[in-house]
Every structure is written in C-alpha cells, then in structure tokens.
Amino acid sequence: MSTYPNYHDGRRALVTGAASGIGREAAIKFAQAGAHVLAVDINADGLAALAAEVDGIEPVPCDLSDYDAIAELPTDVDILVNVAGIQTVSPIQEFPVEKFEFIMRVMLHAPWYLIRQSVPHMYAKGWGRIVNLSSAHGLRASEYKSAYVTAKHGLEGLSKVVALEGAPHGVTSVTVNPAYVRTPLVEKQIADQARTHGISEDEVIEKIMLTRSHVKRLIEPEEVAELVLFLTGPASASMSGTSYPIDGAWTAY
Image (spheres, rainbow, N blue to C red):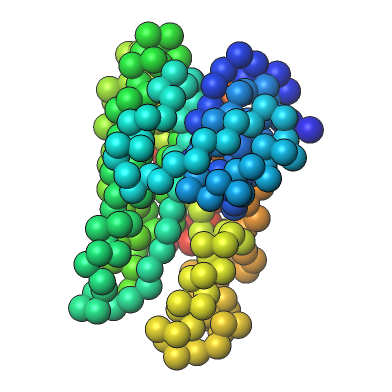
C-alpha cells in the first residue's frame, strides 16, 4: 500500500542502485505510487527479479562507472533518485588509487551526469524531483573511509547547486542522510571493518556502527525509501537545497 496512491501516475522515475537495498525499496515505493520506474543497476539478475515481483518497473541494466553507458539511459524522467553506492574501508596511505577513482565515478560523477541529462526534460515540464542518497557521512566523517566521505560531501554540494538552479523551473533537489542501513553494502562494511580494526563483526556493529547513533538499531531500507518518496510528494515543493538526516541522532552533535 502506497502512502501516496496514484500521486505519481503518468510520471517516470529513474532509480539507481535498484537491484537491492534502499534503491530496491525506493523503486517499489514509486511503482506503488503510480510511477513508471526505470530501475537502474549493474546487477541485471537482481533487476529482473524485481520487475517480475512488482508491476510498473522496467529493468535497465547499466554500469554507472561507464559514462558512455550513462549517456544511453532515458532522459525523459520526472523523478531522479541517485542511490547507487559502494564502499572500501582502508587507511588513506593504503587506499587503492583505482578504488578511490571508481567510487568517485559511481557515487559523484554518475549523479552529476544523470542530473545534467535529466533536468532539460524537467525544466520543460516545469516540474521535477531529484533525491540524492547521501549519508551521515555526507555531514560527518569517519576514519578509513576517505573515498566514501569525499564522494558524499561532494554530493551534498552538487545537490545544493542543482536546487538553486532548478528552483525557477519547479525542480527540487535534496539529499537523504541515513546512518547505517541494513543493506548488502553495510553487510560488506561489517566484514571490512572487522578486518581493518582486528575485531569481531558483532563488535563492529556495537562499537563502531552504532556508537554515534543514539537510537541503537540498524535502519531498515524501507524506512529510508519512505522518506525518499515523501520528498517527492504533495508537500515537497519547497523542500529543496537541504539535507534530511535519518540517523538516530548521530548528527545532533
């Protein structure tokens, strides 16, 4: 059941990272709200499974580190949700250069390319919604995550610029900033952090992941997706140029 049934009827929403986690739940939310969802991910099998499960979802496999592939994606979209993300945990002096560059391509360059090619359609229609999935790490920093934190801070700035430029055209741009969400990305981080810090995976969750959150639980992907949908809903016209934490009070201090 959608919070806004039929609100997005006739609209097209492009959601990246849609094969799993937050992106998958966001794609489902928009389809339930009536949008035709272009579900983008490198995981073609995951997209096919999603499309088989939910009506209104069109799988669009794409490698977002490939700028030529991004240029082939549909541009006639009314809603753009940039979710796709990856993580590498390593001290900066040991951080692989190629992984740093790859994270920048997927998590900062790809959103820029997608926004650049999508806003002309939105401007022409006088309406558009752009939601960029940032992180508490877009507002704060943590050790061993130089690429991820850099990309998320860059995404915050990009989103604000787009909000300023899009305002005269009825286009809003915001970021959503969750703490740790129960996704495949976080599950991989748990293992990486355990190896980097030399502690158990249970200790990673308790002593690293949740130490800054005053609400001591992992966030569920559906909770984040519901906020994403809200930021495109009936009350969203003036919600632009800012960040929306969902972080258990992590960024309250």
